Image 1 (spheres, rainbow, N blue to C red):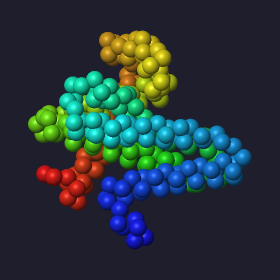
Image 2: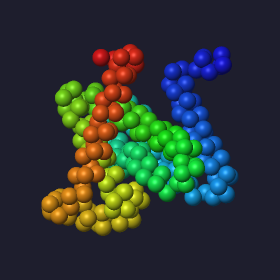
Image 3: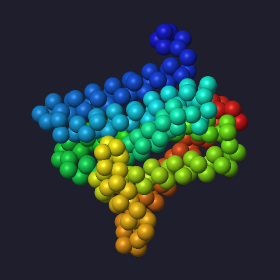
Length: 226
């Protein structure tokens, strides 16, 4: 215990994230053994994808400490981060799979799903906060807030693309034209796709409200310089 306390707050946070991830994996293993099935393995894949923007945000933050944001390295990291960021929040939609769970296993499965989704969202918000810190160094508070709102809207739209249109992150690299075609059709003819707003707006409202509370909580705890 003394060794943990002696760690820096950042290392303690990283250790807590790692332990929480291990707990989630442990719950999944227990569920797989009990049911003799690894049918919920997508939770593990989705959580692994949620760790990617977290790592990219750290890499970007380190890069911006000695390079301009307009440099090829920083721009490349920014694009990759934005491509992978929605995966962290997409995990919220995994709750839909609870409808396939047997009623006798529903409580345990709900705990397991919540464990994975909580860590995924936390990783997403943490990586977003890292990027927000860098944006705030270069733009006004109002512009920073607008950019964060836009980023969360993009994430909300990406959740729709993933859950309803069944595109995934890798398709951005393997079939960008296909994604662009489907997305542009919904912007050009919005009245033909009412489902878009029914998915995007609730997720955007949820994400923006959750992040606002988290951001204010960080300020309250004195972890952010005002």
